[in-house]
Image: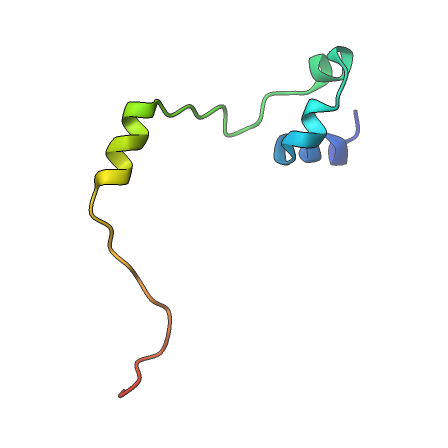
Length: 61
């Protein structure tokens, strides 16, 4: 499997889902690994207060 196909499969779920079982078997694990967040963890994150950081210049500076 070409490196470009591996990277595309890692990044593009639709492309990855189009691969055959044999192609998926050749696909190495993504270097960052799998990340799974439970519904409870996601809800906790959504409830936490957020801080907005702007990169816009100061208007009166």
